[in-house]
Image 1 (tube, rainbow, N blue to C red):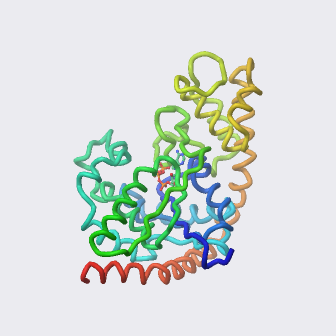
Image 2 (cartoon, helix red, strand yellow):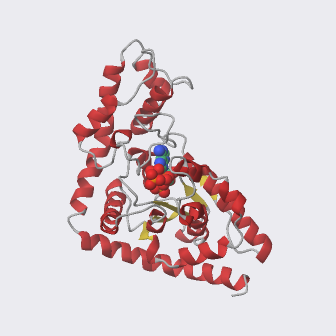
Image 3 (cartoon, rainbow, N blue to C red):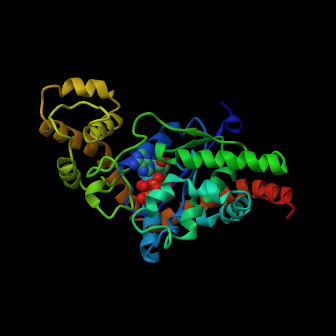
Length: 331
Ligand code: AQP
């Protein structure tokens, strides 16, 4: 397939905490797998991270850490464009244009906003957190991406992106490609280890709720051992057993083995052995990523330069698309 004819892919991760196994299985692993099939733009969405308070020094450090994890997980800058969102001002500019057509009502229905404001209430939430999905729409539409590989948690945001693209095209004439989600079956929704009704989240204040990609092997073993389980001893996925279902899903996504096969293997055996084997499977996958990432972090300037090269390319590709939207709107 010629490079020009490949469909374009856009996706990103916020540098807002410790990247975890959910980000790996729901996003990164899939990005690596499709690298040769598409024209890929993988972004570190640092503007999105500002929608909740960040310590500036820590944010700077996290941005490099995410870049190192992208590379360590197997993204190849020769085959994809890796860059920081804030180094391409067109993201914020297109977000503002789309704010003119996005509706308060539709943003109010976004479950991520509701989840993230459940504890503190909406009064103190930033306007940015409310507007997060519009910036995400800008990220994607700015590259006329046809496909967006994301975890299941982002499905609703992607639907809004599609709505905004269609609305813009209808109001101002054909401008944006309406993107399709690309959601893999396995690993698409990894739940918290200490509460399987909650999504595993990197900004969680409870480190025991997630397995970080940079966790040491012993920390991984400890977290898996302490992961909550359901009543009974049967190792079987079912809606009544959300905790064991989550662990089975993680096992399956980590090893590539179907859930049923794993259930068969552990039939009649207790949680103890299952958890021990699951922990080893996770260590086997994450340890090499961790080691490569730590080595890459020894060269911060190299990481910065790589991100800057990516941003140059992203600016070049997105500039005419932003210009077209501006012109259509009368600017
Ligand atoms: N628990 C998850 N299971 C599967 N996929 C997940 N993703 C996130 N959590 C899970 C996928 O990772 C990508 C990056 O997500 P993000 O950083 O843009 O924001 P998020 O979805 O809000 O992720 P987190 O970890 O929950 O971060 P915080 O706590 O900072 O908000 C996306 O493709 C997402 O689907």
